[in-house]
Image 1 (cartoon, rainbow, N blue to C red):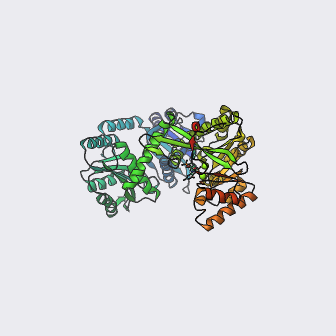
Image 2: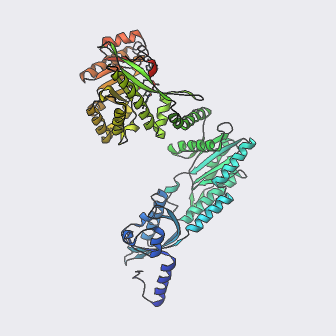
Image 3: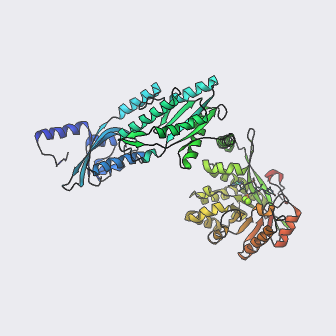
Length: 550
Ligand code: C2E
Ligand code: MG
Ligand code: MG
């Protein structure tokens, strides 16, 4: 071991040898780059002697922000010329956590600059695992003595079985991982214990669980006003850390059994969602969801849960709505629209389904399914010798995937559909994003080179629409239904639609009006010079087997 700054006495050498034998040892330079690691360290961490030299101590911690913060605070302490000690979680080269009791000591130059640092560590991983195991068995959170998450589940399920009415209150300490005051594991422990005391004093005999580093759950029959009073109580009872009063900000969500939710997992999820909403609005509140929000949320949860099953069981369908071309006086295209009817949830409209699918990622599967069906449909027309295009709605999340273009090409090949029979529709929201993403524009251009065309859907309903027309390979626009709805009622709308059609013509774009539902709208649009119309007046969306292919 290369500790040059110590005097070379016999005692010193034997101390160094002993440390080397029992401890994990690292030595860094003044920048935190590793200059030495002993065999124990290498064995536990899985690094090789060659590779570890020059790595930083931050790389010995996992990338999770709380662990990187620990590394920062150790380093700050060393920079200020002081030693640091405490329990920390480190990471092996393979990404596995291990736990150590760490002592970090600085060596300083004459003028107080950090020259090097020693890290002496004792591996306590087994103790920690044992503690966790014991905690699991005893259902107790070791640090606070509160119930563990496992015990909480049991208690909640018992209360549910007994039919007790209660509120499930999820509470989380705001900004926990970025609190400056938490410089050492000791102050963390102190904060959590003090916070626990406040919880116990306020909620008294009600069951309280710690479910995460900084998150807690209280089960109580108290009303909302009482639960929300905990926030005031915390303000009046600040926590002292290093003699400084700390007013904690907390965020929380309240969900009631049985009124709001009926199972442990739903109570948990919804209470967390309510707290997340609070956090996204800046935190500092304990909120309960209104009955209406609960209904909406429940339906969303159900749709989310059933979507994968629906995809697996082929219970999604595609309906096709005709688009009528004025010049040829015939239907020249069908728009593919996804349909899902569930026996419990009823009809789930695409407006409900698509945003959830975008959130849970299933939009890519749904998009691929619709594209496959639609291209099969277009191929059938092609084989029957009729010129018929199909139009498919696309979501930005699909196109952000670098494989988007290749997937489209695979579907074209698999279904035998000519690329020039396919239009992809996207909305202005998509366009806004696509404009920023070079990869999307490149993939769009490649698909366009194959013959695919792009339509800007819901034109006029979104943002400053005109800009996209310069950057994106768009060949047609669909004027949003809201303008068509008001066409015969509002003279200003009429002028606006006329303007849109004129503008579109000067840009050499093919202009479609959507949502055309009567003869008068149809005639007026025709006079204004529209290229095509779509809507209930022409035809409603229908399953493929009800459409005559000839
Ligand atoms: P969109 O692309 O603008 O589709 C037109 C919507 O207007 C369709 O609703 C259609 O049924 C409805 N519609 C058409 N003509 C009339 C009319 O005369 N009167 C009225 N009241 N409505 C009419 P739908 O099928 O509910 O779809 C809603 C939206 O969901 C679509 O708007 C589209 O943005 C999206 N969507 C549908 N299928 C898919 C899909 O497979 N993938 C993606 N990403 N989005 C889809
Ligand atoms: Mg559309
Ligand atoms: Mg539309």
